[in-house]
Image 1 (tube, rainbow, N blue to C red):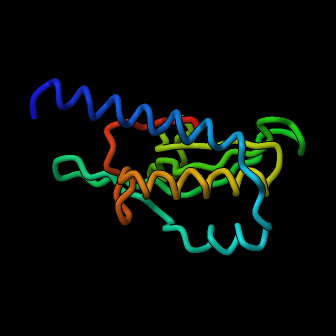
Image 2: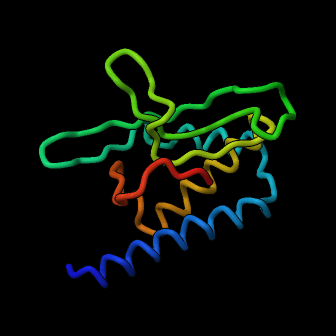
Length: 133
């Protein structure tokens, strides 16, 4: 692949991430039961294969602040080391003021990334990581 093709692919991926972020601000909430049911069906981990190494990213939700704060909850696929999580190494993350909101946003982003081919099965197919949507 030449540099021009690579540049166009990178630009396309950046446009996808921006489009997801914009649409996320316009989300109408699904019922929490529907969202939780869909979240239960997400893969527990997504992997990146580089050379012969496999890096696992685990689905996690964190409470950061009090309920109602704009960044109260984070949901992401985060890199898990041998004994801990690395908050600085994740595939993509969303944040919201409540548990229900952050799960709804995460599910929306996940479905968009599947539709665009960024996630295929349980594999991450983008060279970009640490994407905050």
